[in-house]
Image 1: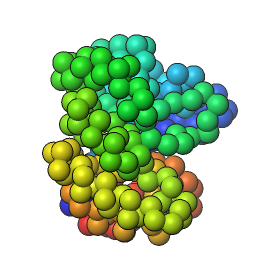
Image 2: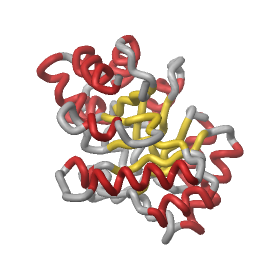
Image 3: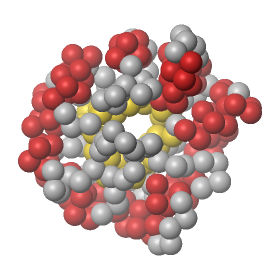
Length: 231
């Protein structure tokens, strides 16, 4: 069974659009966990455009694993080491982007990233690196000491030719290096099944589609259908 982590960032986006206290990301997290979801993902951005610091504090109180998405910065590392989520997924972040546009440049930024991985690991936090399905990036993730990689599936989701094959090759390389394999970005009911067949895949993290689908069918039905597809 592939684990499903649900990213609840855009519940917070909707809340912040009106400056109200609702919809509450914590309530959304509690609801999806009641319907078979295995963990919660939340990205605390530098500009706090959706998830806020107090959301992370509340989500950490859940019994389910919290996957804290973060940029490789001193501020975010300090927050993570204080809150101590189950896992931290280090992602690239640009203030002007609408969403994460690609994988982390672990090769070019290895000297910057390494100290943060060391600190997070020392705090007992499982570190994951969000990377493109490139052999060099996977090798560097292993050298940096991250036990988990999350492959960026955005290009595949957009229908770029050859991307599924690239992801399949990346999955095999990850296994060679003994890395736990996660994947995510742009996945939906129609395109997720081939991704579930990646060798060694342990977890998918899906957010925007499930929150969007919930507008029409409700959050419980949205995540239950995805869980069924993963099984």
